[in-house]
Length: 145
Image 1 (cartoon, rainbow, N blue to C red):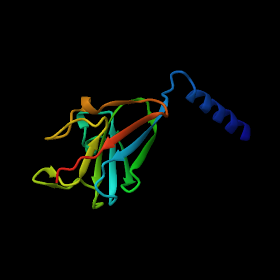
Image 2 (image 1 turned 60 degrees about the vertical axis):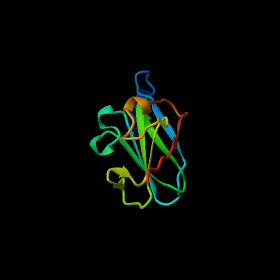
Image 3 (image 1 turned 30 degrees about the horizontal axis):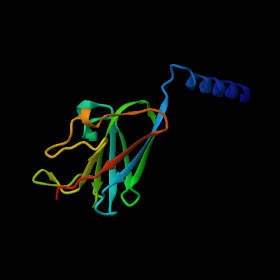
Image 4 (image 1 turned 135 degrees about the horizontal axis):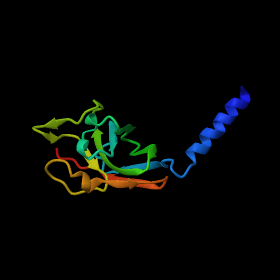
């Protein structure tokens, strides 16, 4: 039994090192311009242009919650590829973006820090490549109210 397990484990490790195996990536996120250290950061990382920036519509999106006072987050073990990042500074911790007349009351930010005023930026403005362990994004949070 032990020999069978060892053989299977070695075989699995060899398969993950094949040239055709998808490399995994880590994306380090640093969040700047938070108006307070209260609440949470809700992060959504997606490769699906059609569902950006609303993670709720994308079952394959990566979601992460971090404490706002930390100002950092990390996505690990991602397949290498192109992604877009959306962040909400959920100041009251109710797990949603609060709005007034459609205008965000809480901070929002996106990868590559695009200029935007009415509505979210286009996917093409925020997409970046995640490859290996050296990928990072520094996101500036913007507040409207």
